Length: 237
Image (cartoon, rainbow, N blue to C red; front, top):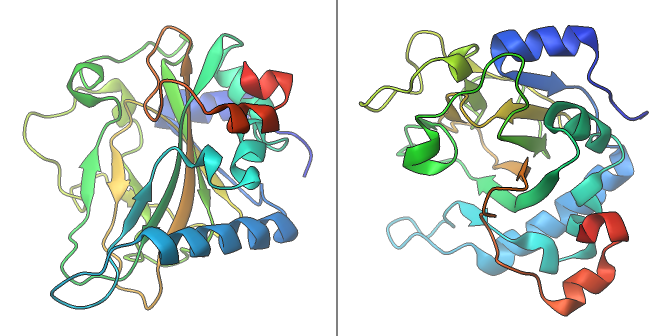
């Protein structure tokens, strides 16, 4: 797929909705490769639930040292030009995360904004560079509701987040339906989260966070020398 750029139509959607859903950014061969790595991490690191015996969800942070493929995704050729167009050039990678959400009838879903209590109170204007964005790569099909869907409130990035928790099925919520290989890009202040997973298989995603250079990173203070050796000059920056 050719590198994506921030077209005028994308800019309009971003300003109005606070997110973009991108079709087919991952090729079949790289999707197969990254899915295999994620499955291996899940088998190794997910803990069993003492009540059911099934494995719990996996939220694996700072994955760059787990496999070379995670380093390659730092500036993925299909999406990184779009990241630069949205955020500007003075940015850093703040997070590289693997999330696996298996079916769980007890999980009711959740909604939040990114960046903790302070950033929950911060919103930027429609013409400003964002403070932070995330790309969520979908590694499994999520083509029906209640399959652990990434859930958003379009336009909420310009509204204060309430003091009380927001239900995943509150008015205005949209469960995004996506295919394996699609990706969502979203602003830190967008109300978002995960819907319940009533399917028969896990929802698997890969999340990369980019922020302005003045921010502290989420996953790490510094990387091990063996990780940096795998990076290109741009990736090390």
